[in-house]
Image 1 (tube, rainbow, N blue to C red):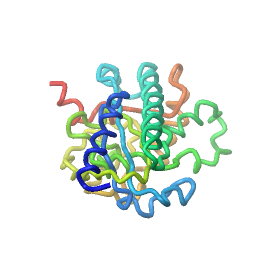
Image 2 (image 1 turned 45 degrees about the horizontal axis):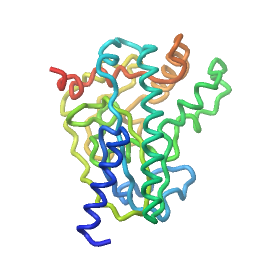
Image 3 (image 1 turned 30 degrees about the vertical axis):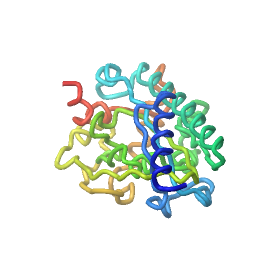
Length: 255
């Protein structure tokens, strides 16, 4: 595939994803994710790029939250994940139809497990499979130019902030990668102040973040989501959304 054809095919795949319901679409160079943990460990072998797609969350629902998730946010979160799985499945089928390989990555594996899990026996849980994924979609979204890593480790888009869910398709189709964005969080600490678990450390960084424990008190965040918020009536799985709602990059676009 020559350069011009590659650019045309890249635009076609992005447009296809948008027609299927995506609000954002970008292409990630998987070389930028070298060494990232995956399940299985050799998942990315033979693949060169990933299509990252995003689905916007409902502003009114997010603005209605204060210090915890609501049943409406849980519904929107679930439906966004379902839509993402449909989009990535269709994008993968479209790529497969051109003769290239493609694998859709599930939008939210931990949430699916959590709905069937009794977390009242937390001391007996092995947290590792519950807090990892086939391929971290945040890292893919950042590499695809959909946004930068915020201080909360959410992906922050310059137009809608962190108010979107994302998922990806890995492929060997020779698509043209997008350019990752530099952080624009600066000295802002709105997510730090809003975090109900007080887990965001407020560390400033750009590009690929430092190890997770340097950025977040992850056990504190995890326990709040899995042992507290999951058990709120009509929520049912480990989500929060408070840092999403508080981010000025999302709120300012409504003004």
